[in-house]
Length: 208
Image (cartoon, rainbow, N blue to C red; front, side, top):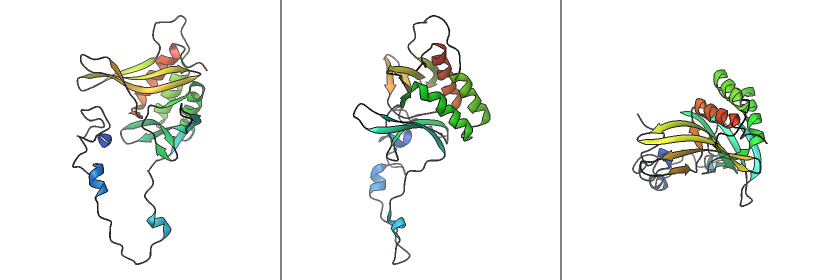
């Protein structure tokens, strides 16, 4: 069975080592010969490069990053789980999604209204986001959901960045090393998002 993440803790499709020699290899795609045309005339539409596929989604934003570039955050159902990612100019960005904490609830409501996920998953996410804050700090600056990737520990974290923003990102802990941020789009089961959001809400980290 193919894994979504390779042994180098990247998306398999994005890993230059594990994708080498496969249909995902960028070098292989670059030298692919053009398909012969069956007709002498082509419309403008057939000459355009294929656009990146995306299904129905819910979005929040737009926002501006530290460089002044505009982007939005999209939540969508994809094969293998739920993807949360930053998008700009119709392209997915290779960064962990950052959005306004106050927009998270609206994003999840739109997800339910558009039936992007199963009823059970949508309700679990909304219930997590509306979790009441408990009294008193517990020393944690983020909400998390723990998992494992091979011999590495892994967490999905929802953490405030200041100015009302939160980042949703995977962190990994390799043996003998410190926790390391994975600055990339997140793709995990809805249950993992719900666990991390619930923990963040319980600690009062989702306040606008």
